[in-house]
Image (cartoon, rainbow, N blue to C red; front, top):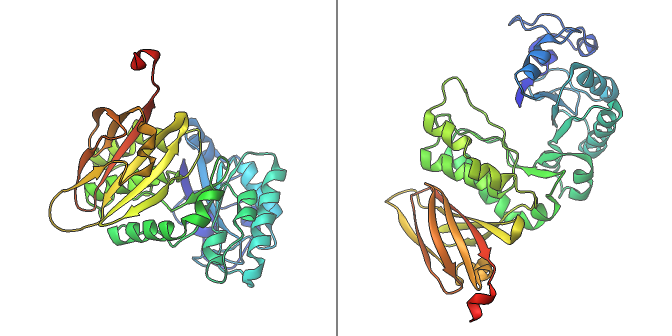
Length: 346
């Protein structure tokens, strides 16, 4: 997925709806979006999907033309251009009570185009400032939705998103599932503000949260370790697990423990070391610290995905598995139950 700004958002000056009718002119950077849409065809020819940005209100957050009152024509324009994802921001809505109506109107308009366009909303992000959002309505309207503030290229930003999600998980987790997901914002892996341990934490916890994996980085200059982490097939498999259940925060005692149910009665477990100083610290996984360890009755197989891949062998209900977790780092595991055979009782 390649995400770019709407061409109208790159042209300064008064609002001109003609720019949204497929007749965009050359921008200051020489990036035309004309009726033939050759740029979008080029993106699709590379095997990529194309995302675009717009706003439910009168203006975008940067002050460029918004979509309020033009939902149908803008949706048709995006479909004609071959857009695959719409990121729909929530700035400059004259009356916040109209947020829900605006997002629902755009959803209806997108569906009427007949083109499959992923609809990324910021409805709850802007409504939380006034009241608890109606997540049932949001799920019926959007494919994924932002709940909290923008992520920045720093550890405190990632940590605040995790803490907010944990604090509100009783509201967020039940509404997530196939077709609709909570979006904690983009992956900043491959930038400059996170250590490698912190990058592993973001990748692991975004997988546990069943979050959309949208990268915000410069792929031309990404370091090999960050690239390897972003392409880790075991982590992506957890994120994309077909059961489609979001994980949840289960323990906070200098460590944060997150669990996610997976298909096949399996479990993903993330153990995050909250301390930011010192060296690695030990955490013991057992039925006492991890109630879901009950699935190891009678036996289970444990595999460590992060920080390095390691088979940890067959365990049972009374096993204690010790992991070493670096400061601000995370150990990511999968636990798979082993069915007993008739021979086990002989």
